[in-house]
Amino acid sequence: MADRPAHRNRSTPTTIADSGGRADLSRLATAVTHYGVRARVVDDTAPYLRVGNPESDYAEEDVYCEPRSHGHDFVASFGVHLGSSDSIEPTARKVAWLVGAADES
Image 1 (cartoon, rainbow, N blue to C red):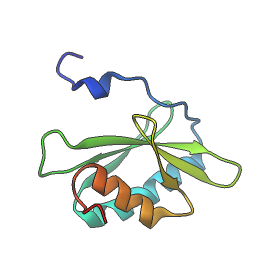
Image 2: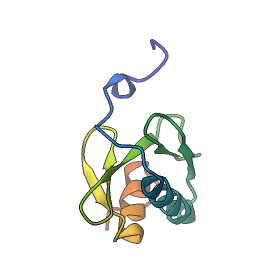
Image 3: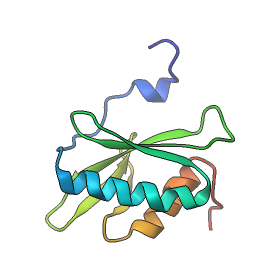
């Protein structure tokens, strides 16, 4: 783990693996690629979306999907709520901004 940045060594938020969550992560992956970033769903105990800015060696973020009573919430690896499955486009913009691929506005 010495080769990984310190922020990558933190524990991940609690998530529950379900097919709806994976489908929503796939929808978010499609939306965020319009900002010119790399995005892929990683199948783990709980799937997550790995997003990276190809113009940076360090701008990479894992986005987790947490079930809610209606749909899912997307959460950054450091615990910040990014949006919900009901707001894919605004969430994609936040994720792209997080990795430096979109303006703050």
